Image 1 (cartoon, rainbow, N blue to C red):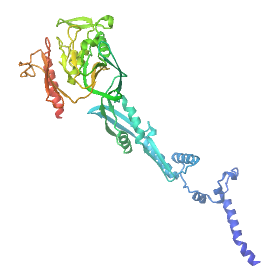
Image 2 (cartoon, helix red, strand yellow; image 1 turned 45 degrees about the horizontal axis):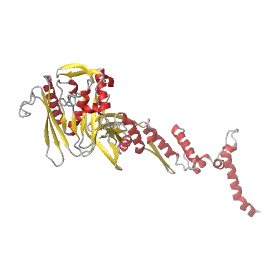
Image 3 (tube, rainbow, N blue to C red; image 1 turned 180 degrees about the vertical axis):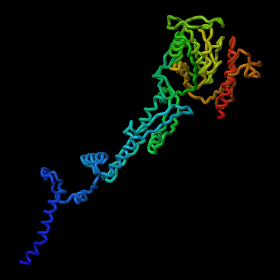
Image 4 (cartoon, rainbow, N blue to C red; image 1 turned 90 degrees about the horizontal axis):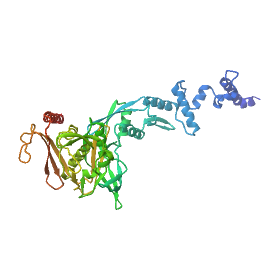
Length: 461
């Protein structure tokens, strides 16, 4: 009998211990069913159950509740969740990153283009999470920033616009048929997104990003091969202060008669031919001031056309193309003061023309338009043959009294420019551009002398 009691004693002790454990872990409230208690808690004390489940006790805070919901979501996706403390740390870091902003200062070739504010709060998809069995982290994704940066800066820094030369059309002059107007723009460096991400990560207040300025291109196919025309030169003038009728004539001349004029290699361009005369009200021209007999101003159809011819001439001069026919206005016109005072060209069908020749190895296309600043612009696109063109001026009798033109000094009613054209493998060719008027404003030489002095001072800084 004594032996039997000793044999069953361990079993009795184990049973007593189990009963005692269940009694300790049962809910104290009578209305809570036993089924609501987790299995591991039914067999062990709360402390033992917590240790066995591999979880630490966490305070009841919003971040921990979010972490618990995230953990549950991971488990529903049959993924292994990292410890709650890792999830909570990731959530804390994410909330801190969402508060960060960065001022991105944009510039190109020394020109200030404005500032863009990068806000993580406005772009939460910039944040990338990395969750594994034992880790949970969040970081700013540079690849996600790049598309947002590209889209956001385009209001102040538009992208270059490339177009296609589709066909040619004949008429008073040959014209190119294109699918738009090629425009200058700014290219964003591939590393820009990484710079913004780094600035946000390091909590910098601002960073600077330099954009690359690029001219638009014109693409075309010939004999099954793809070619491109690049910007060779630009002519520009401003017609602010013009009457409504003059503005309408300037726009008509630029948009309908200069735009997309096509000049093949060795061919010439006649501005008067491009106007497709007669210039009359019946053909859409308005009455505006025109110079008659050298000194008179009269209302006539097409007043303001010379703004377009002057702008075209400036593009020709900057391209270094041979000018076969050109004459300056007899009266000094203040509209042509900006962007090249003295570089102007008057035209009148049947009397005076502006003619130049294409001596480049490929076709030339004149793309012309006007903008919101009331600037008229003529861009010449072609094949760059490496020629370099430099302009020096303007020179006046008062500012350059010893300068000689045709073995004489500059007259008081003249404006002079010196043009240098250097083609690869040849010596520079010097041309003198002389514009002669009835008279010039006395303040003009002094005004441009002061501008030249200011430019020199600016370069010296």
